[in-house]
Image 1 (cartoon, rainbow over the protein chains, first blue to last red):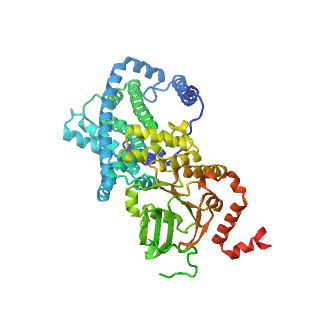
Image 2 (cartoon, helix red, strand yellow):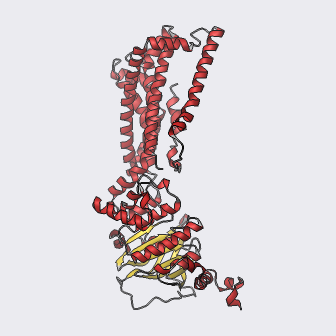
Image 3 (cartoon, rainbow over the protein chains, first blue to last red):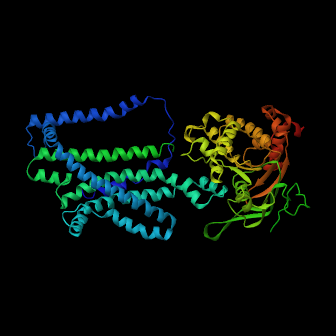
Length: 280
Length: 290
């Protein structure tokens, strides 16, 4: 579980925007497109839930092995305010962490793209940050900032978010096409003009790809960090608490909250990414 | 350095040694050597002598690696010669670039994909501080000139290759340059689009009166468009022949010209210059052999 962010980075590093897909506006209707895109996974989800219910009930599987979907749903409805509150706490940590990580990532990427020596200095540090496991870091930070503070979790989330934002933005800043560089030179454009008119717009889709990857990592990290101490009010804390008191269906209800939170972050950043790379 | 036997055929007019501001481009004794792998060097260009008069259309033609694009980049000051001198309207190439004496179009249209067609065309105007209202008026003129008035708000990825290239040409004309540098601008287009674009380029050129340096590897294209075709050969890149092909005033050249005897004569002359008379004689051709 703790190694997840690193593998996620490794597999998602290549942004899809680099291949310059020539998206042409096809004439198909948006409603039909939406239905074709959304209905199959929804149908699959419903089938799986029904199947799980059937299996759990018919085979009499005990709840600590697998809680039945209906039991989870009951718990989710019953504990809705608690799930919502825990989701907000974890979501806030993840969001603040994401913002801090993204800002630091972009700033350092700009510096690294401008000054090669700094790039050389940063590369090993970033590689080190990328492989720091949350398990190792969380207890240390909790002792540093005290067990009642959320700061440790925010730091963990921002560290996780920083890496993909930094790497993708730096990559994007180096993606200016030679023909655009020639063009700006032929216009005798100043360096700041070249940055504003070509370098930043070229890098933006890459930045948003990094942000999309970072958003999931921030949620996972903020949540997992709660397993290792600190205040008991987030989703991670709630899941461990419920599981520890043998309330398995309730633990699952909080897991559902975690899934929804992760989906929300992912969907929002994906949307921004799509808008940013519309005309590529 | 070593001057091989075939002298440049059309000897440059000697008296104009001093940079003449009426000539669009004057290239003297230019050499460009690239550093290669393991200390070896590649001579991309050597002993280049070229004059392009004001309003003249000159094509550079030759096989891959003959340095024609390199020569264009030197004139545009996108690269610097290792020896020799280049003047554009009497100024150094650098000064000419800084003062925006030329417009340029590349083989890849090189449009900024995040800018609309209109915003792409106005890019040079915006960079050089023209006001928004003036820009809008000029962009409208240019869109009319290249026949894309209905596509101002489209984005490059919504246009065909030929339309993208027309946008690039409109952009290169934005500041009314008296010199247009074009590096195989139609190289990536299909033959039909290409011929249409050529005719259009002639019309635009007649309207603007700009001098053009046009890099191509298509013989018919060079003959159809040019007043003069400069033939180059590789290893090392140098000019081997200059052929006057002026088939009529730019504005009067129509599609019929492609089937005209004069056009075929021009094609034959350029082909012989490119491949050498031996190869040309071996090819079965009507008139000359009999």
